[in-house]
Structure formats: C-alpha cells, structure tokens
Amino acid sequence: MSSVFIRRSLLAIGFAVVVAAFALVALPYFASTRIVRDRIAWEMSAWSGFRVAIDGTPQIQVWPKFQAILTDVTLSKWSEPDSPPVIDAERVEIDLSAMAALRGDVVFSTTRLIRPTLRVEHTAQGFFLPALPTGGRITRSIDTARDVVEANPANPDTGRLPNDPFGTVEFRDGRVITAADGKETEILTSLNGRVGWATLNGGGTVSANGIWNGESVSVDIASAKPLLLLAGGTAPLTVSVKSTPATFSFDGTVNVSENSYIDGLAKFSAPSLRRALDWSGTTTASGAAIGALSVSSKVSGGMGRIKLDSTEISLDKNPGMGALDFSFSEPVPVVAGTLAFETLDLSAFLAAFTPIAMPGSPAPQEPSGMGNTARVNLDLRLSAASASAGAVQMTDVAATAQVKDSLSVFDISDATAFGGTIQASLRFDRKPEGTQAEIKLLASDIDGAAFGAAAGMQRLVPTAKGTVSVILKGPGRTWDGILENADGSVSANFGSGSLGGLNLPEFLKRSQEGGFFPLNEVADGSVPIDGAELKATISKGVARLDKAEANSPQQKIWLSGIVPYAGRGLALFGGIVPRNPPAPPAEAANGPPVGRQATFFVGGTWNTPFISPINREQTAN
Image 1 (tube, rainbow, N blue to C red):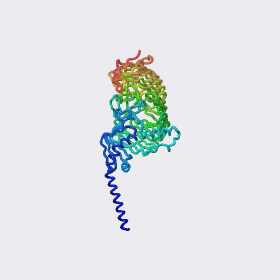
Image 2: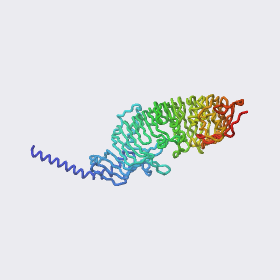
Image 3: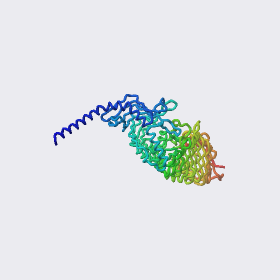
Image 4: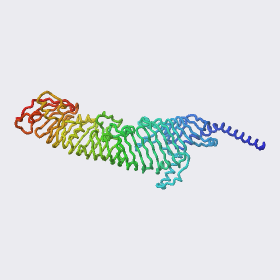
C-alpha cells in the first residue's frame, strides 16, 4: 500500500469527521431557525387539518435522538378559533429526520403527546366524538378513499389508495372530556396508548388503557385496511376490551357508513352482570345482584338492529343456546329473542330484571340517575329442561320475560312441579310512589306435601293431590315488603289422602287434660282424610281464614282466625267435631273415643305453634 493512498484515505476520513462535526453543530441552528419556527406547526396543521398553535418556546434535542420538544400545543378548528381547542397537550415530542432537517424539510416518525386533553361532543346517536377537521392530508386521503369505495363498493381498488406515511402517535397521561351546560366532565382519565399506522394504505393498530367510570380498562383495535373503514367501506376489524367488570372481543368485518353493518364473532363475559351494567351506565329495572354472564355468538346487523345467531350463553353457570335480537330504533334499546337452557336458576334470572330484591337480600339501591324506567327493555322467550326457584324444582319449563320502560313481567306459562303442573306470573310496575307488584300462582294436580315442604310448611299439609291458587298485589321493594302489605286471596282444594304432622288421638287426649301444649308434642302421626279445603282473604299482609277444613272418615277438623305475615304469628280458633252424630261410644283401650270433640286456640308462631284447649272434650249428643 503506497503512502499516497494512505494520506488520501486519512484526508477523506478527516473531511468526513469535519462534515459530521459541522452537521452536529449546525443541526440545532438549522432546526431551530428553519423548522421549529417555520415548519413544525405548519406540517402538523397540514396533516391534521386543525389550526396548530405552539405557545411555548421550542427546544431541539440532538442526542440520543433528534427530536423537537414543544410545549403548550393546541389543535383547534379553523372555523372557530375562539372555541376551546379540540386537542391540547402540555408537551409534544416529535422524532425528526436529521438529514431532512438539514434540507429544511420536516419528516415525522413518532409523535408523543404528553398530558393531552381531547374534547368530544355528545352526538344524537348517543356517541361521544371529537369535532372533525375540514381539511388536511388525512381528510383528503379519506376523501380519495371514499371515491375509490363509491366506484366499486363490493370490491374497491385498494391500489388507488393514498400511500402517504403516517407514523406512530403515542399519548401519555391523557384525558377525554365533554362539556354540558358550560361545565366540563371527564369521561376518560389516565389515558395511555399508541396508534401505529406506517402508511395510509396499510394496516393500523390502536392500543390504549385508561380509567372509565372508576375502573381501569384497556382497548386494542386492529384493521388491515383502516383507511377503507374511515371512508365508509368494508374492512376487517378486531376489537378487544378488557376490564375487571367485563371483557369483550370482536373479530370480523365492519362498515361504518350511513348503511353500516357488522358481521363476525363476538364474545362478552362479566363476573357480575349488575356491576357491569352499572359501570357502563346501562341497566335494567333491577337493583338486585346479578351473577356471572358470558355470551359467545355470531353477530350481524346494522346501526338500528343487531342479530346474535348460534348464541351460547351462560348465566350463573347455567348454559343455554338460542338467538337474540338487539334493536336500537326506539329511545330505549330492546333485547328480544329465544333462549333454551338445560338447567336454569330462575332466582338468578329474575334478579336480572325485577326491581325488587330476592328473598333474604336487602332492598336494592336505585342506580344513579335511573329514575323509574329501565335503560334496556327485554322481550325473551325461555325454555329449560329443568329449573329451580329456591326450593322449588321444575321440569319442562316454558316462560317469558318482558321489560317495557317501568313495567317488568315474568310468566311461567307451563312447568311440571310437585307431581303436577304450575303456572305463575310476576308483574312489577315501577311508579313514582313506589314499586307495585302482582303475583299469581296456579298449581294443578300437585302433591300437597311436596308443595308445603317447598313453601316451608312441614305440618298439617295434606299428602294428597289438589289445586292451589294464589293472587297477591301490593307495594314494596323486597319480597318480604310486598307480602307484608299485600292484598289478595289464597285457595286450595285437596282430595283423599292424609294430613301429616298430627297424632289425632294424642291431640284429643291432651286437649281433654287441659293446659296448653306445643303442637310439636303431638306431631308424630297422620290423619286419613277424604278431602281438605282452604279459602283465605289477604288484606295488608294478614290472612283471614274464611274456610279451613279437613275431613277424616269420622271427624272434621276446622280452623278460623288470622295469620299475619309480619312477625309470623298465629291467632286461630279451631275445633274437632264428628262428621256424623255418633252413638255413645265405649272407651277405647288405647285412647279417647273417636266420637269426642275439642275446641282450642292456636297461638305462638308458624314454627312453634301452641295449643290452648278452650273446653274439655265432651261426648257429642
């Protein structure tokens, strides 16, 4: 290697070092004088379509990367310069191309918005959206893409889409606000995320997390053709929303034009549906706790109506299948459809829309701002191979559930239970003065003992086939409150069988002896009966027995008096008399004569009744 070549190489390297050093020294000067002052605001305006103002003094940082640091940046509508800005940020960091800066050009690669504020407006469709720009490169690109879509909506020529670079936009510690009646309200806070969109004709992603309604939520959105989507065309879209109250995902195709539609697979799950509804601000008429819900379904439809086909649903671990229809044409959204369950907990289902607490639960609190109407109306047809409502077990259940504004109705049109069939109706009407409830039950050809056991009555219930009818109406916010104030009637008729929980010979013997005694002491037996009948009138939660009789082959057992629901007390007068006047009987070796009679008073409570004889047994004449 010659010395001349070595000298020339060293000179070239030295020249390159001098040029690099000069560029490094000169770069901040060129940037500050030719870009920051004259070009960054213009370039941001040209892209966004908003009027960009930079109030703070710009700073240029060369190492470790070349970037412009701007403070007090606002993006406002050109037509409304005096209105609050659409976007403002305390600090904006823009990564720039160093070589482009030396040429006097601006090339953004990444833009970071620090503590930005986005102002949105409440649209007539119920969405919160920011004001749209009237110009800018992005708007012109969308207009060009719209022409492409209109030329061939079914198969637009994506090769004609603008291929301008967009880059990456990051935001940290942001918020979204809206103004109403001159007062600003925060919708989203602690907002952090990233928009990645290399070129406008390519794919894009959005990842963000923040706090909404007091809960942390993260959102991920991706589309292979976002520009087509913004231009009113059809494009693939995936959405994932994750939070503690609920999760949601969608994978399919979407069109957001005037004739918008959606088609794909959607999944939703919530460990507590009540919490999820309250969190979202959308709730039914219920204030009670509602358990876990998960839904997976094929989704299709438009802005006014969405269908869920092949729907798999699980409510409180009760799996079901069916189809649902969401309609948004009315002021209050309507959910209609048909669901079939293998097993169903009706108590959990009722809690989803009834405005009263289930038995044993406290009175529900009204959701904030809800008033007396529901924010979701329902019209559902239900079926279940087996179902339960507390201690009641049913099979082959057919039912309907309806919510219409302030009215909630649940009907069991047919079900098998207690060895017979039942029909039931629950109606709740939310009025300004309070919730009014109406309860109807018709149980036909049922086993009285099984019915009594489910109702908590273990004694003096006929083990026989019969019919029970219950009609109650009253105000209240809990089941106990309604029953304590209800008006209505109860009737029952049973055929031949037996009356459990009564040792009649021992009862007559104790009555003859005098002195009160607990009914439990003479409950180890049963009495054969030819039939039994009950008629009671309910007034303000107090049952007055109009007729209560059970006929054994030789005697009639009857009761009269009142049974208040509140306090579960008893105030009854009763008697045991022969059905036919007998001849004077001989004393039986194992007890008193069956032809004798007794009258008595029944006091105490439902669970611990006491018998107080009124007069000693005497032979019927």
